[in-house]
Length: 573
Image (cartoon, rainbow, N blue to C red; front, side, top):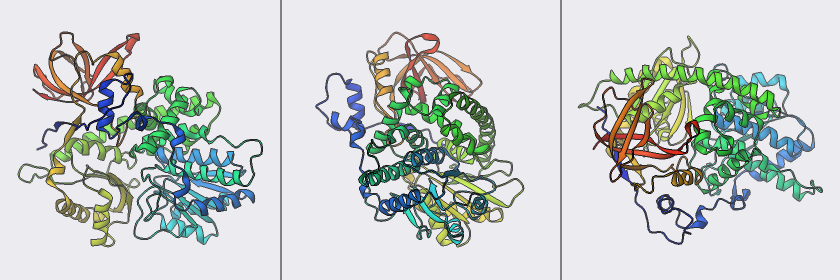
């Protein structure tokens, strides 16, 4: 049995000093997210953290400068998610801007190479004759691949942001803000952000060496890519990341972004001039990610590197078709996973503290989405497994967790207590990946159950929906909806405003068999407001009066200038 989430209102500390031009509701929202003054809400790129304290940069810059001066061949080793794709595009474009004449890239194939710089990928890189490999968004757990590359006489520079294990790979240089003892103030950089910082440091080194007598290259041209990768990877949007995302969004809205990103926005039906972080997360990133999940992420990277608008449009349309296939496959797998959850044995009427799900027919490229969807539904750490390749005995797992339960640390503990059970793993507090032999799945299930039971606080299993409180009838208008849309960027760690209130259900209907469309009248009001709850149909009519957690959004459908409530949760009042 799954307990219904509780709607809890965020505490709001005292705040003052805001100009009257900032709506009172927005002042309250900012204060609840730790911003106490207008200065803390200003997103000026000049306030970006300098690269100085990021460990490994000095050695990395020296290696890159020497490689570029000697015109050696640099091969960027990407990753098959959106952070890895944008990071690869930033690396290729940025290094070429900074004088590198021989830059290639290679992205691993999920089935044939596995994750990151693997020994199998190194074998396939021989044909490129690289002198220097640079990993983006991976590498910190790629011991065998780094060793294989070094054995061939290649140099290896790792740029990554994932948490390191007890031992580091034997690369020439590692740049990762999450290494033990690294002094860089923001640990939340995405992989694309780490790569961007490396380019900033390299440009400064070249400028100090007198390389730009006629003006230095403009690396701000890459900020749209940095923004997309940062939002897509769900890293916390601390102040530094919000600076990067805000600057990238400005470029996109002004039509100064990469042709590929503009084409992706177009095929997704998003207005580039009004693009938000939410549009990145739900429209652009899924289309890029779909290539890495079902096909080859090289297609997505090609789109990001393309400067021809017509060709970019063609690539974006292909990515859009792949994403449609991904959505259908995902829904089928989620339906299967929900049936598996229904069949799980209950402990005193409750699900286990952590779930391990597997289906031999699942696609390894989509299991992360399945784990995320089930985790959201049952509010428990969830790991979904699929065969690494059809008919094979190796399994790939993707884990998603809940606040409080550090999933990578849990996997590290299982690995320490059961040597050889997990073949490899890596990740963050809220998401991780792993691989193991199919014959050891049941042993892993037992170990994961024991670990979650031992380390789980009962309080963590009670799902809460954090609200920014109610809106009055007079506040629930177009002006506030527009202000909220532009006030972000909102995202992980800096959540989009969510309100709650009591409403009368005046009308309702089901759309597409799954979505609930309602006409709601707020307490104290007379006029009804349009509301939509995607996936909200519960096979029975909603009661006449409900408590709703919702977002306030502009509604421009068919040219109207109205508002609608995007319902995130409702319960009987």
